[in-house]
Image (cartoon, rainbow, N blue to C red; front, side):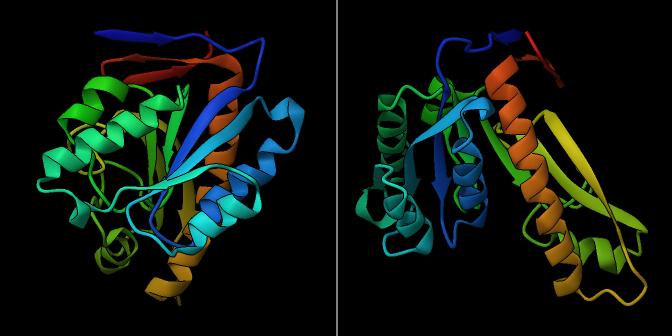
Length: 212
């Protein structure tokens, strides 16, 4: 199946960003959206827990926020349905999972699949999961990096939108390597989300093409 999402020429693309922590990637997107030529605007920020810096960043920027904590719902399916309904109510052109530490489910993917992206601190399909930088360092690779992908029902398994390479230095620790990956990740995210907002994108199986 081919999903075609056209560019949004008349108005900025509407972004909903989901966070679980400090929101540094969110901040990078908020900063980029201040430029009218970037082509996007963050219209809402959601989280899976209250009291985090990511929500505070949104509030300081005057962006509406919402919280759907898993513990507040009887089942994970109920949580997924509630998250889906709230995100969809903002009519997003693109949803960015920026450090969002929950896997979305069937309800969400049915409604918003194909227009939700996430980042992973490794060059997919290598080293999926929570330990990407550590696994890369332990394996002894000379180059790792970060990936932006279309969210699907797997773990870091969606169609790849963009990747950025980061060399592994001989004296790297997990922390030093991860910090350099985060820098590359923010740059890749801001650049690629802007291109998706301005030019649209096409998902054809595992191939993602930017542009109309």
